[in-house]
Image (tube, rainbow, N blue to C red; front, side):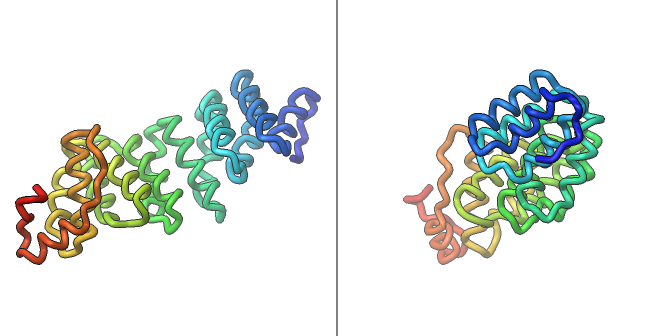
Length: 224
């Protein structure tokens, strides 16, 4: 990794962020956050876009939260326009951990609907952390518009984001329960259960929803 840093120790740490061994990269990220120097920020942000190891990425985020927001937030916001999906998702994740309310406008509808599931999931999580008071219901309606998106993990992430909005999510969930699409209705029903009981199992009963539509919207007694 290229750097113009003149401190040999710092140069070695930055180079270690690109080492072949994941444990070396992990230790470098830990060291950067333990003794944060302004010269590390660019290297940490850049590594977020390409780092293949989940645990190293998590450490990179932790390291970035150790710097003043003024040093990191502008660079992370710039990553949201990257062509690399990982750059966008990791920047969103890090912004959610920093929690600067001024970054809310950067969580755009485009990111919430990003075609890459990992970017969208990161945007959902960031949005529920950063949403200003009074805009929770509008956010819930936007999120509920994506019911039935993706695989089970993606759907669970969306449900958890809505659950994090609490009572503000209830109108959007109720609207989706009346959807003519069984998969949307089933996802909404699973989310409603989680809202009532966050410890409940996440069950997508699409078959039940289909039978309910066949009965004119009434759930069979056996599935209640």
